[in-house]
Structure formats: structure tokens, C-alpha cells
Image (cartoon, rainbow, N blue to C red; front, side):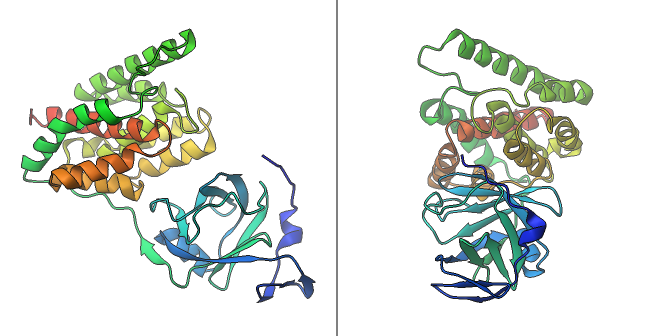
Amino acid sequence: MQLVNYPFKEFIPKCTTLTRETLNIGGRSFKKMTLVRNARSGDVGFIERIKASSFKGYIHSTFTRTINIHCLEDDELYTLACDQIDNGPNTLVIDKERLDDIELAVNVPIYAENQKLYIGNQLVISIDKASLWESKLPEYPSSLEALHRNMSKMKGYIDLHGKGGGIKKALEPQSPFDAEMSKMIEERTLTLLAHILRKDMPEALTSASRLIGLGPGLTPSGDDFLVGLFTVLNIPNSQLFRYRMLAHLVVQEAKTLTNEISFMALKKASRGQVRESIIHLVKSIFTGNDEEFTLSLNKVLTIGSTSGTDIALGIYLGLEANRKVGGQV
């Protein structure tokens, strides 16, 4: 990954004209082509910041389908995502199939002006046509028929179609290190769930903190599992909703224990703010028919390498704990 240092204060450009061939910044004309794209949809808070021209930051990291931005105002990460990615907290989905074909480097400055987001002098994103999206989890259902039916299928489906190597054990032979890591993840996950069932939140906090940063992946498996569990803790009217403060306390421990991208997912999930595909999965567990449930579960299972499987298992085991605490099983 190429690192380039850009003095942010010296950048602060005033884009007065923008064409397909030139970019006029502070009276100077640049010949380099600037790519202009429309945002299809976006997190309502992100879009409001752009509308208010109150966004300044720099590129934190770049990937094939996403660009992560560090915002200087609130010290959070925001994401530009290609149109193959679902909506999510702090995310703007743009009308482009991939993002790694744009010459963007880490630390390139970013700012908002005139309802547009400017990424260096290479990319401009307009929000004029963007639909607003807000992360909102459904309430726990009063009728439990669909929930019981879908939960009875969920674990077996994950066992069959989920990706091993994280919370789900790998089927292939593992190195001694990977085998020991798998054992630690399993033990710490089971210990956490046991403390939740006993409603021992101080011990649950200790156990959850020991999962942070544990396992493979850009977002480690322990973190992804907690994202799924935090989702359940934030479902209104559920038995575990009263214990949602556990998620906030875990996040206070997390910042120095994992990377920034994974920390941001944990922070948002602790507030009940998760990706659109995760919300659809929860809804389909509560009220969906067989087809709706299968489609939504498959969508989550495709996230990352093992991330989707780890998140789905966090949701499944969290809902199982919720049912046991509520005397529903």
C-alpha cells in the first residue's frame, strides 16, 4: 500500500469549476482527469455531514470494493463502497463496480463542499440523487412461530454452508497455531455465553474482552462474533435488551485491542447500528418464510472470508441465549 503525506491545511481547495478535462482549484487549472460519480445511497448521518459541508478527513485505507476515510471532526471511520456492497453505518454506496482502479493513496485529503465529497483531485462524489438509509433493528416479535422455525434450521445451514476457520471450526487440517487459536476462540465464546445465561455481566464483560482481536481476518473472528452478539443485545423488547450496556462497556476496552476498522464495526454494533444485510437477516429470522430466510442468511455468509459466518453465529447463539433467558426453550 503506497503511503503519501499530504499536509491537510495546505490542501483545503476551493473547487470553483469542474469539467471532464480540468479541475480549477484556487485559480489553478489541473489537466488530470477527475472522476465524477453519484452516490446511490448512504447512511443518513454521513449524507447530512456532506450536505452541511462539515466533513474533513483523509484516506485511511483502500481495498478493491471499499475506501475507508478517517474523519477529523468525530475521529470515526467512514466508508465509500462500490455498488456491490450493501448499506451500512457511516457508509456511502456509489455507482461504481470497483474502487481499486482509481489512483488513490493513503492520507489523500477529503472534504465536503456544495453537497459533494471531494477525494483529492481524483474523485468527486455527488449526493444529489442518493437515497437515505438508516440502520434500525426490528423489535423482538410477539409471535414466535417463524422465529422458532427459522432458528431450528439456522445452525445446520451455517454448519453446511458457512466458512470454517473462525468461530466455525475448519474442516481441513490446521497448523498447531491455528488449532490452538480455534480452541481459544471456542472456549472463550462458550464462557461468554455461559456468563450471559447466568446474567453475570461483570464476568461476561471480562470474557467478551478476551475475544477482542482474536482470530484470523482483517476483522478478527472474535470481533465479528461480538458484532453479531451486540446486534442481539440491541433488539428492542428482547430479554437481553436490558443488558445492552454490556456492549458499550466492551467497546471501551476494545480500542487498543484490535485494528481501527474492526473497532469501528464493534462501536457501531454496540449501538445497534449494523449493515443492511444483517438487519435483513434478523428480520427474516423473526418473520420470514423459508425463501426469505435462506436468501438473507446466504447474503450475510458471503461477507468477507469468515466474517459473515462469525457474525451469523454471533446472532444465532445470541438469540439462543435470549430464548433461554426468557424461558422460551
